[in-house]
Image (cartoon, rainbow, N blue to C red; front, side, top):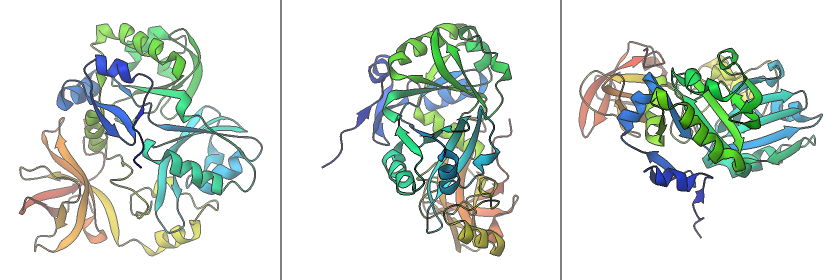
Length: 364
């Protein structure tokens, strides 16, 4: 039987705002309110707000919290200080990735893991399966709403809502404070857009109050609600991976360019095999590319060399609203992975020229 699509706390509000709702990762989510392009530019140049309450949150606590996190994640969480966040992934036993996530450190025995909506149950089962040391785990995903206030005007737009000096919240750091009259709000210097800003974690019962306060405070800055469509084009311009497209159970973090979050200073699930892979070198790599001819690359389009030989596959692609050109991510044979390399994307049976570029693709 197909599972019912879940609703985020502010579902009715998004419908009232004219959000086009679509099922995404098991949730009814706003994909756009006006147009993807307009919403994209709103975030790049001003400030916009995404309701990303579909994301999952797990608390990991107790004397064995760090031990468990170190075992199941690839990055080194022992390096975190209180109030710091870290991008990481859960490696599986076969060289792939269970999910990518962010680890938040509150205190020595208190952490929060933020995981992708589509993988909440899978990740929860995975962590519990490996919790042989007895860390205390709690899945709080259904209790938390998450708003991403993103863009260069984010600080100005919402500073009036909090005594916390937002300009002092560094990238990948967070603080817990009062926000919009609500206590104990997590204000995190994170996001998935490359445009600057914050992610605000609140309890569901405070979600509507906080959302409305953000829009009231930001109205002089032309703040707008932003859908998942623009979230995708913004992250693609930055070259950020999307689980299920660019990384999955079959892609290794080394192939995906995530060697920087794969630390062999500790033992973790499948670390020996990944270390051997790093030392031996991989046969394919995830690259960003920019079209040199008119055409929009899409997931699963073939990537070819100049002779027409298959060398890889597009994993994500779009027309970049900032650059007004087709861009994408894809895996190619390692010898074609160097920035500046000419490749061809097969778009509707035409082989169109593209060039491998260093990330981020948007250098704005």
